[in-house]
Image 1 (cartoon, rainbow, N blue to C red):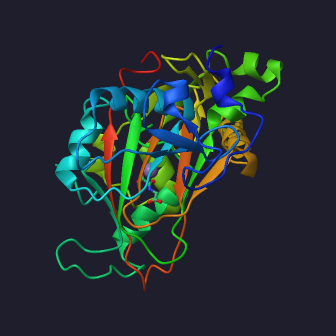
Image 2 (cartoon, protein in one colour):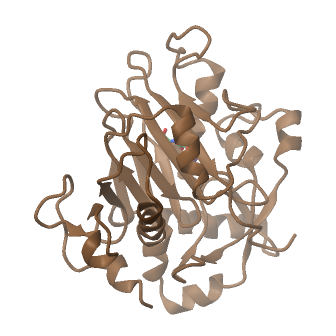
Length: 317
Ligand code: OGA
Ligand code: MN
């Protein structure tokens, strides 16, 4: 496959800043923006983009290609408003609305925050909202519990804690590539049932009420997916994946947990340490992510997320 060179480079590039190891997009994409790889297999930091000032069509096309190749894109120093974030995100496709359970419900911005938007005070860590949000600390793919799972999420660090509170990303594409052929054959054609009530129930069975359960009934998702642009395949698991259609629940659940555990080994993981004004974009079709704890009682962490919808169901009903 032609994308293989970009996906599995043999050398490591410097982690931050467009240093001497930074390949320019002029070389690879005939563009002027630049990027640096953040791990050997996926994730890249993109430079020369000012989202608030507007992104040219040519630069946007390069970003789309980088997104399909690298799965996680980091844009530093993006001082953006919600409107600018929404406009940039819409370039990738229609946005999802935010589920009932999120403070941003009814808008295109999901609030991932320990600050009460009404009072502007830190929400006590024991508050039900914070316990609900702690679900983000399990490895997951956003909206995999929706019939049409999300394509991308864009998370803007509006206020970030001075330490900890990282977001970690795992490449199910890099992990899939290293599965034995026999395992790949076994996964082909399997369908998993993803269920928000199942995953939130792992924290506390009372977290999801009837209205939410009605909003997000269990849905089928393909266990093996491929990128429509470059053809790279990956398995698809994570916290919302409850069981496998046609297999005994415990057996399917064990397989899905095994896949999640396999993909989240350190060599398939990029750890993002937030700097203020970072915007991080990830491909929910082939990545898992999780939030990491910080001193929640002491430090504010305010993140605004936009979510780009997927282009269709991944499995038959
Ligand atoms: C999200 C999410 C984790 C974090 O925004 O979808 O899971 O680190 N965030 O805030
Ligand atoms: Mn998430």
